[in-house]
Image (cartoon, rainbow, N blue to C red; front, side, top):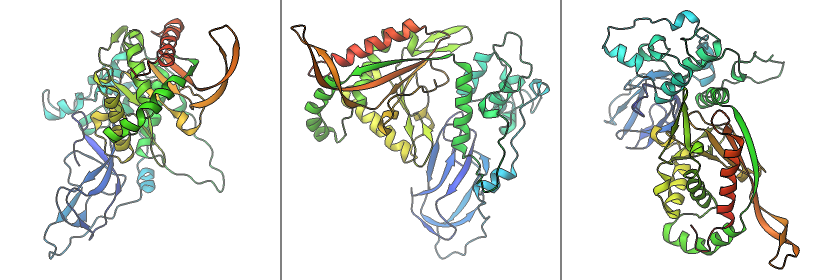
Length: 423
């Protein structure tokens, strides 16, 4: 089991891509894993025959655990295999942990101070530490379900939603959210399937994100006719030189970054009663996975990239997300996020703000519409324009409606007045 990031200590074998007895080439994907960051295909470290599977599908083990054995001598006899159980029985056999009670928050020694167990227990992921800080929860006083008692995001979400007592000064509230709603009744003929690892993580993250941010949305129509004209002028030479498709997205990302610099509240994070104004502009791009699932890879330091650089980064991240080639760092540290349901025909939406940020932009379908245009002579005419509805979901704890609308107004003007040569 590889370590997919500094803060990741375990992974779940979601699917074996090879069977015992099958030949495996070096660097050929051999199994898939799920962590609390990404899903990924794991390449074989060497060529050989898959001789033995030690960890079945649906099982979670610590990093560096031996999950299978390869036989590099093709003439050698193969060992016995541990059958890979189906994901559904594995999920059913392992009951979901109950939300931690108040007593579980009390410090519980799991190792001597400074020991490996103690360090593992307190070394939670950056996301868990950030959420804990926002709610005033001391992680070192919790007993988690991870290796050596490490507190995972699921532990923290369950604790916050359980209504258990928390340290004084905490901003946590008791209550129940959708992810812990009463179980629905199963009717005759229904098919019941356990959520995938990614679906469970997405569910937990969305429920928590909805809880910690005061969601408000504003809606704008943006005329992208000039952007479409510039794109059509550039796309032939651009695609020939860069080997990349030129979509509307790089233009929008560049316009977003330019205006985030003028509206710092939208490129910020909440830390307790403090506001952190980010000086990096890391743009998360929501990517829908096939057949289902969602992941948000991040274009790091987008402020330093040219139009072609943004296009290459966006296309590369989206491609690797769909082929499960992303590393954990590729999906971390977003300061602002863009969701694009318009590619499926949606006119607009109200996406949930990712934890650790204060806003997310939603792009609706880009389409031609009849619009009333006032000419230089003051006369009104009807013209065909390329338009889209944009929405901005923002955290009203630190972003007021006027702040959000000023940002959207500036973004609209930037896109509608793009120079013929591009940004």
